[in-house]
Amino acid sequence: MVCYFGSRLIHWSRIIKYEMNLKAFAILLAFICSGFGLVVHGADQKLIDLLIKKGLVTQAEANTVTQQAPGVDKTLVDLLVGKGHLTQAEADSLGASKVKQAEVPKVFVSPKSKQVTSLKFSGRVQAQYDNYDGVGSGESDRGQFYFRRLFLGGHAKLGDHWGGDLVMDFADEKAFLEGASAWYQASDAIRIDVGQLKVPFGLEETTSSSKTKAIERSAVSRQFAETIKFNARHTGIFAQGKLENGLSYGLAYANAGQNNNSKSDSLKKGRYEYENEAQGWWARLRYDGSNDSVGYYGGIEYGSMPMGGVYEGGDFSAYNLFGNLHFGNLNLDAEFMNGEAEISGGADQEHAGYMIQAAYDVEGGWELVYRFSNVNAADDTVNAKEIIRRANVGDDTVDEMDQHYIGVNYLFQGHDTKLMLGYEINELEDTSGDGGSDVDANGLRAQLQILF
Image (cartoon, rainbow, N blue to C red; front, top):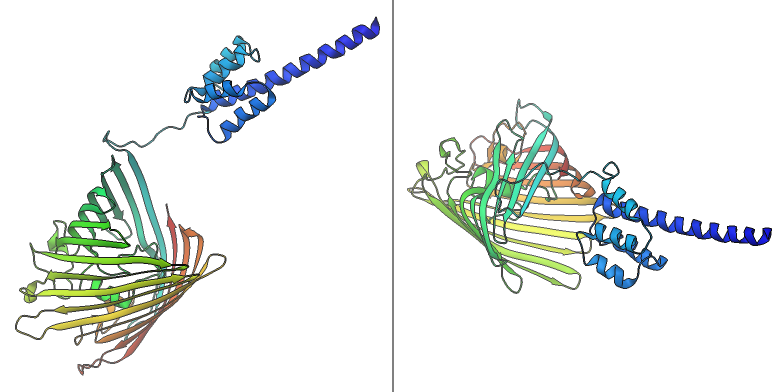
């Protein structure tokens, strides 16, 4: 009799223990689904698969549950109650237990327009250090920490075709409009922007500063964009798109003055100034291709902008040939620019130059960079002060300039977190007989970049 009751007691204790384990498991599962309000996918599907394996639910019942998303948590609890794994009181207590539920994240920012389907914010922090010898007699050396760029931007999409972008730079004393446009994209073949953007001219100039291999752009790039102020940012209408067979294009019809967005009287005029209330145009045609492990692209750009001031009546026109070749860890870039200023009543002035750059990725996030650039022009029209940023330059106009850049980059997290170190060697040639002399201008640059 004792043995009979003892064995029955052991038998019932095992049943009770088994059902308690099942009930605890079911309660835990219901709590997870209820407290976090998950839609069944990924890890949640694994939980349901485990329920099937444990024999708590059948495959047909699981299919019914997943079809009820996003109300899957209540459906699952009801199923467990119906199968006797949970009591109704236990199910009700799960719904009333607010303390155990994870707090739903709150939306702190929402767009004003109800038509916005996507809203993103972006930022770029570039902290930089430059150390440059003084260039010329009596010029002091210069070494300083500063912010090269402090970008903050917003990017919105309104449905499938409309959108807008706004990026400001707060690195200078006054906030600067880095870029802004309202756009319409009908397809990959055509996107129209109206606003202030970079015109399609210059391989380096139109490459984002967050992705350039060298800390500052090359001598020829800065001669056209900073000395002449021919390309870079203009306000107008832009078109771009990808065509078939690797072809793409870019077009711009924009105000002649750089950054001319209604405050033309405060603009820097450049070597040949610009004509007020007048527009210029720029165009690019590019081809991208690949062959086995080799990728490449190349193209041609052309533009023309009316000059102003004493040069009014003439145009500055230029073309650019550019290309890239990349295979394995090696990346090669090159471009050649040539431009001419039509001088009324005088000799036309020509500007020309090129850039060649090689970058090699080393395992572990390291990148080695070498770049050579040359720019030459009419007597005393190469502006060394504009080209060599933040260097004290005495005689800032020369005839020709050679520039070497040797650098090493470490990409902690790709371009998002990147440290750059580079040394520039600038050879300035002034042979016009106006009292100038050949001098060197060498300096060190370092930059830490964070993108978000």
